[in-house]
Image (tube, rainbow, N blue to C red; front, top):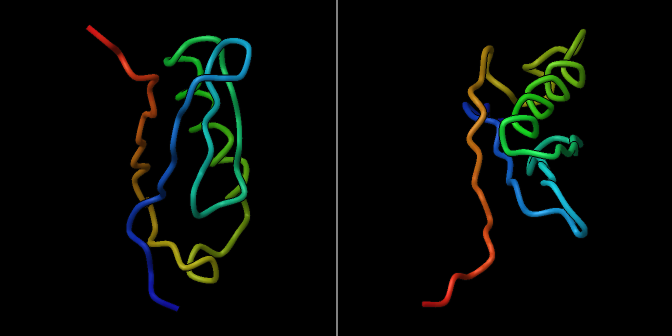
Length: 77
């Protein structure tokens, strides 16, 4: 298995309020009221998910950075 050197996630507005963060290559989903809270929750959720796991078995490089893409509603002028 080829090692991925990043963990990819996307953050998008929640259905009613706040934001949702979802990893694209790990089974991790979290949410928060603000962007800052959502990012903090994402980092914690990833850390908990990977705790005790062999990163090589998951195809991840040690200390892989998290790359986040933000989906936003369109803005019309």
